[in-house]
Figure (spheres, rainbow over the protein chains, first blue to last red):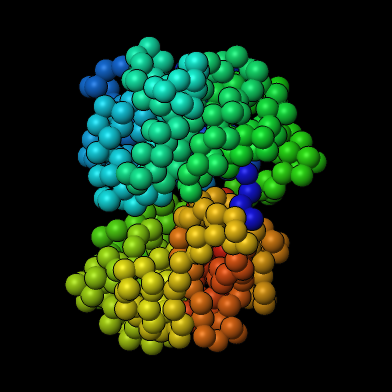
Length: 266
Length: 206
């Protein structure tokens, strides 16, 4: 049986981690490579980097970050933000990322999902979708609309239908990011996560809203998620990853054991 | 020197990074001569069986691997698609493979006991060591490793299986026969336990 995955998310702008991380004494908290290594050693099952660099000219910086991370951590990591073309994906994967995450770019140009899956395999393509609650209607039967540009732009697409379409186009995983819950620390949107998890045959990642350990437990049980994105719950040191895993294991959730780290065999 | 076989697909740099981290020299190469003269050979990768075999044949590397590496007794490690192409045939693309290990490669069922089964399995699964092997030195039984696969090998001779995993069905997750070793899981993405097994492959006389 697959273990449920805990995936810390690091927002990176111009090569620096933007969310303040306040608990580390010996780690440059602004350095994405140092932060990735820290979470790797803590037993993170995967890491996601979200590039929020505004200007296109500075995007090359992110590829340097990806190369450096790939030399230091030996678990999968994905990169999202600003990927618009198959060439953007190729550069990111060749730099050492295991997966690419596409979001607004896929809504604007759904073919990129199929093109990416054909070029690199579905397992490389994570379709990330920002969803916002709407009254259930003929237009939004799932009660959620897909939004883009950080939630500013509505798309008129129903979240469940977009998830199914993304799977059909070749996405290997779906990340469901609730705009309503994001930052609220009141838990993932369990209803839409569950609806999509039950409706597709690919792994579903819950995102947005984790503030306490029980939110992860609910995401994996009531929400039916295969993996959970965590941000502030781990970034501020309140709940380190080993504590989250102990809690989940005590509640009967299969999680990966976090083995003692060996720096090197030498 | 460890040769990492470049067949124009897959994530080759991550294996090289892991070996470098462990202090082993490696070269990503498609040159038959470099592969013939290497001390050990790793065939890694993510990809489809049909495309992988086509690329190996076009590069002339199918014969090199069969005759000059595996046939010559050189330690060989296949990872992910690198375990699948060792068998005779794969259901994926109905591909004819290297035929070094008798058996075939099949897809996970779409449902088990009426419940849908997700494929590919993407994530960390437990690996049960079904017989002792030097690759597992220092690796606790039932450790988690990182898998990305829709297909899995079914050896004719169950004795080649050294580990199994369970994704709705119990399947062969690692094999060994003499100088030939292979894992369905990604050693280069499986954290410290994966690094340990890679290091064991690089250090042990097989």
